[in-house]
Image (tube, rainbow, N blue to C red):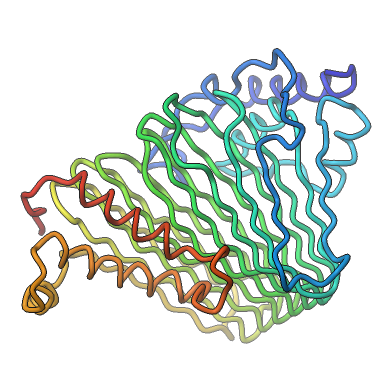
Length: 399
């Protein structure tokens, strides 16, 4: 690394060493503690051969000419590193901050997408480039910009991957982003994805996430609703077969008439551990703000552990908020009627689970209206099939 960039990385490591890793009793990680810091730091040795750092960008038909600017940064170059991090805040002082410091210590390259006013349809595929990696993605939408983005991660590799991804989304006034994310994982992978979104006045962010479990898999989303009438919706479908998976959604309302919605559908089997952790904070002065949380867990077989944690922190009177969590088996009546159509038990269960998952994702981003290249549907059917194929025949116990 260049001298300045190397010093910055060493400073991040020193900060981590001085302040320590995530405590075992940290509130945000109490049900699924992450592996120790050493796992995420890896070694910076040879330079990465692929200049795109594993990202492949496709600009699809229907995109307004000239609105997409993509730039890949070399974080080993001091000047490029400063420019890359110029618009980003230092890691927040919260339970997840050690992940951010570990990322700054290891990050080698970054991709920045700047989208101007107009329409854009983008597909962003990513394949791992190292056994331990810290990718960085910046997405910036100008005032009035509108984008649909599919972020599709590669299918699990033969060798395990340790990946600490940081995504920063900045939506200017009136900007709109529909963000579809597909994150499959190999059984031995350790994955931590952190998405930070900042929304200005009248901006809208919607995310539909389809993720599968691994040895450790965290999907953490922190959304700051900074401008009046900003709105955010995040819907996740989590599938874990004898593995671990956690989705954290933190929505921070900081202005009047803001809206947030979070929905998690957890499908778990075997000895899986799945956590849906949703926190909504409403600051003083958030007149007529609205918040909704809905979490559901379905054990598909075995004895999985499903933890659902809706949480509201409200510091203002004139708001509307609701939250709820449900846990239970697939309805016997639905299975019965599916079997009446001539389906065997496995096919009936797949049909019902796929329908539930598709409905949950569509409430976030309805991909039926999108070009085929941006749809989650093909991934969903395969993920449900793999999930059920890996489950034993014995039904889950409840109660």
